[in-house]
Length: 473
Image 1 (cartoon, rainbow, N blue to C red):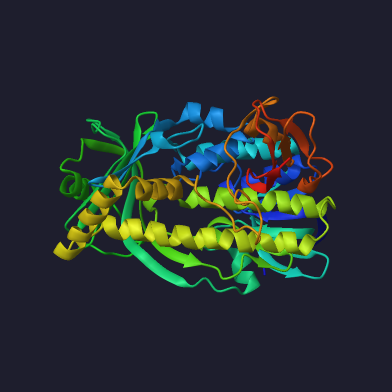
Image 2 (cartoon, rainbow, N blue to C red):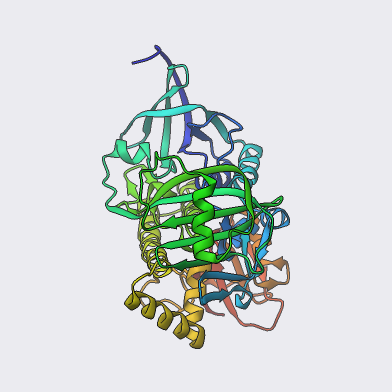
């Protein structure tokens, strides 16, 4: 069983298992709300997370803006205004009605760096090199048994716990929850390389016959390259080399662009899976622990960060005693985010299957869909909204205002930009100057703001930037 138990108990309001982007955003939000947060992470402190994620979409950047992190992240990445999913389909992100009309290409570890810095500054406690060994819960707490790298055991008692520990989630396993689904793509090669010749258009993606390749700028002269060969399907344990990736890239893109000096290369597979319940009692699942999908569109990390933004303010409201119906509010995490995860799973799966089309019938269908999307503005806008996250909305109660549940844009208000006001982590009530709409039922601690125009309606905006209530004054 390893080392002896220390018998030490550490109390926390929330135990977050996993210090990837999802867990870090959640921990930072909760700590900033004045709650006691413990983060458990298997990796030793300072270990770089060289994972697949590298795209930060507009909606995620808006959420990072609400945490005063977006501008710094953008300054270190590469904004790309046109996302090429496969030839001839590309999305013109400059059409987005957002402060961030692009996809930002940046390594996941840059996102983690900013989020961890924020979480530590807010007071979150980190326990690196530590694994979750067991997990039980009662009506009023969660009890987590932990084991560090030397086998020493300890215990954390928390009021709630969140599993943000990835596709092989220990939390999900210990809860006994299924993770139905299967592999959508096998034997994909991923590498960070130098290029002698930069492609004329980036990101660059295409599938031809049995091969598919993708190139994106990664900063500092590095490029992230993915390649897949239908005719060479081997286990993830089979070593990948640069010659194999060069061959795939030449066949798919017409050139390997002088690919050289790989600093990292790996073979992986991608699953499509979703847990049936994002909540079990006092334990929640978020990010890849709750859903995993193909890398097409770069939606994985973004969906996880948006899970965290949805859950954090709800946990904070319950733990601070600011809601009349705690159970209903916590249940709304699953009811709102499960459909989004299912949509992302289906849409990313559809993109990857179109990108890897190879039979004449599949290629004809792909061409038809691509041309239809390019020609039909409403259809193109729907795809653009889905990929960027801008169009994500939550179901509204029957009879409520049509804006209820929709994303709030970065409104220009008398007090400044909306997403600057959201940095306080509270609801924002927007109304005409001198008017306080009683029907809004705004929390007492809501930030009061006013239109910088002659609008006469009112909006109550949740801490995650979605409209909770709308109506006339």
